[in-house]
Length: 97
Image (cartoon, rainbow, N blue to C red):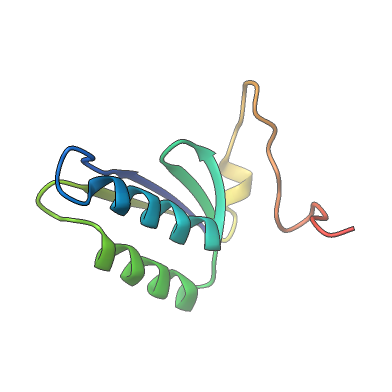
């Protein structure tokens, strides 16, 4: 299923910059960065549960925000992209030559 993850981390609090880097690193392990704090992740339900728990362990609920948008199995068909960045489809585009 396709999951869109967005986050806003307060970097003015203690450890904010470190949390920001850690959240981005975890998201990169599961998907692609499509904007600065937005990731598209193609995961199965078990992977999503693990990913979500990892992120919830990192973020600070009093100052940070995490949002998960579950777009489902046909999520790629629901995405329209316009603009400069090219879109990579991790399921059909070859990443290894």
